[in-house]
Image (tube, rainbow, N blue to C red; front, side):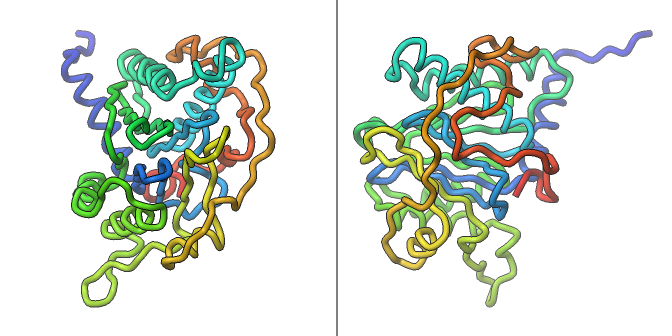
Length: 293
């Protein structure tokens, strides 16, 4: 007799497989603050990024298998660039990109044997705090519009609990960073076992931090690294001007979509044409905690 499994059992098995892979990764938190959106990721790698830029005022964060979410990031950059060039830059919104990601992940989850072990956040900064948008996408294509913050990967429930207790609207950049880092440090295996049962604080070298700053006229995304990040963690004040990316370059005509990817997203393996914020090439798919960094 040929092997048979019910569709319900197949979906349950795929969901369990993807959740296990995502839970092994280190957490990422995305928070709104008074001047935009803040990305905080526990990631000691300086080249394999979990956070990146998709378009002028749209950012991207992910956890899971690096090769999979990096291909999705590159496809999102290509979709945004081609849509903005073909129509108008105002037509590129976080909702459009999030919907394309949801369609792609849903097709992969239902049609391919192995689902993507990824969880994504697409963030768009608006003219005001009320206009900021955070979209959370799961491995099966589900999409949720979160109001204040998004936590993905690792011990997401524990980090979410810490943020619910300490987050409040209208925080400045330094305060929001401290709240997010404190929540990630409380559950991080790197800081566990601190003195007197208390967890230590994640350092600047163990973090990847970026912002979408609404005060910037065009490209809102900037990374916060080096002295600027250390000053913010030490109650200082710093302007996230640390890493100036190359000029924005329009993407070339997208290649044909690969199986499991809608034509609107283009090839998931196409080169990134944004520049300045892309992840490193090569390397292992996942470290001992389940992902790069």
